Image (cartoon, rainbow over the protein chains, first blue to last red):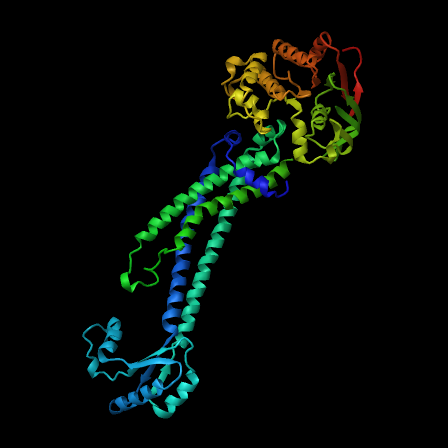
Length: 301
Length: 225
C-alpha cells in the first residue's frame, strides 16, 4: 500500500460501521490512552520550560545589552575626583546617551538582597559605580578603556558582555533543549503508538482475514485501526494537556521578582502551542498507526 | 470466469499442486474432491486470489491475478462469495452485521438493503437468530450465515470449502438445497468437499462436474460417484 494523502485523509472520516469491525477493548486501548496522557503532560512542561528560557534570554539580552557600568576603585580621598574625571570622559564619548554616578541609597539597594537592610554601607570601602546608558549603536569599549586609563586610572569599565554572553547562551540552549524534548516526546509517542498498534493488529489477525475474505481493501482495514488509535491519542493527550496546565498553575508565583523556576508559565501565543498538543498527538498517532497497519497488512498478505 | 492454466503451487519447498488446468464456465456447478491434505483448500484459495500461483496463470473474470494489486483482488473478490469450513465471523458483531459485512466494506449503504437482508436471512432460515452472536450459533446455523454473507453482494461465483464438514446430514441437505437454488439462479458454484454423499445428492438435482485432486494433479472424477 503506497502512501496516498487522500487515502490518509479518508481514514479520518468518521464511519461508524468501519469502526465497529475491530473489537472495542484490549490493553492496547489503555496503553495508547496512558502514553498519550503522559506524553502530553510532559510536553506541556517542556513547552513551558522552553518558553520561560526564551523569555529570560530575551530579557537579559534586551535589558543588559544597552547598559554598562564603570567602577571607581580608589582610596577614599580620590574617589570624588576620579568619578568626576570618568564622568567627563563618558559624557564626551560617542554612543553614550547618559552617564550617572549611583547614589549611596541606590548602591545600598543593590546590596540589600545579599546583606539585608542593616548594612552600615557608609563605613565600607565600596567602589563608586557609574551607570552608563548607550545608544542603539553602542560605543567603542576598547577606545573608552584607553581614554579612561589616561584620564581616570581608577575607573574600570564593565560592559557586561563578559558575563551576559554565557547567560544568554545558556538560556538559548535551554530553550533549544525544551524544543528537543518536545521532539523526543513526539517520537516516543509515535513509537509507543506503533507498538500498541502492532499488538492490536496482530491480536486481530482473524478480523483482518475475515475482512479480506469479504473483499475489504487494505485502506478500509487500516482506517478502522487508524481512526481508533488517533481518537484514543487525542483523548489521552487532551486529558494530559489539561492536567499539565493545572500543574503549571499550581507552581507558586514569584511575583515581581519572578525568576526562572517561578516563571515557568505559558504566556501569550504560547497558549496556541499548548492547544496544539492534543491534535498533534492525534496526528502523530494517525501516522504511526498507518505505518504499522501498512507493514502488518503487507506481512499478512 | 475462473481459468487456471498450467498452475502450480509450492510451499515450504514442496509442491502441493502441479500442472493444473481448468476452466470454470459461468453457471456451472463443480465439486472438488480428494483426500484430506490433497490441496483442496489451496486450490480454492488460488481460485479467489487469496494465494498466488508459483507457476502458471490464474485468471479471474479475464484478469490475470498475478498482475493485480491487492486492492484490485479485493474488488474482484466482491464478485465471489466464499464459505469456509470454519466460517470465519467477527464474533463481536451480531449475525445481521456479519452477513452485511461485504456491503459495509464495499461502501454500500444499508439503505434499501435492510429488506434484502431480512429476505436473505429468511432464505437461509436464520430470521429468529438475526441478533445472535456467532459463538451462540450451532454449526449448521453458522454455515447458513456464512452462505448468506457469501451471496449478499449477489456474486457471480460462490466458492465453498468443506461447507458440510461440521454439520449433520439433515443440515447438509438443507445447505445443498440452497447451493442448488443459487446455481439455478445462474450462479457458478465450486464446492470443495470429501463428502461423497453430498456430491451424489447434488448430482440427483443438478448437472455437476466432479474434479479430484490426486497426486498434486487435477483429474476428472470417475462415474462411480
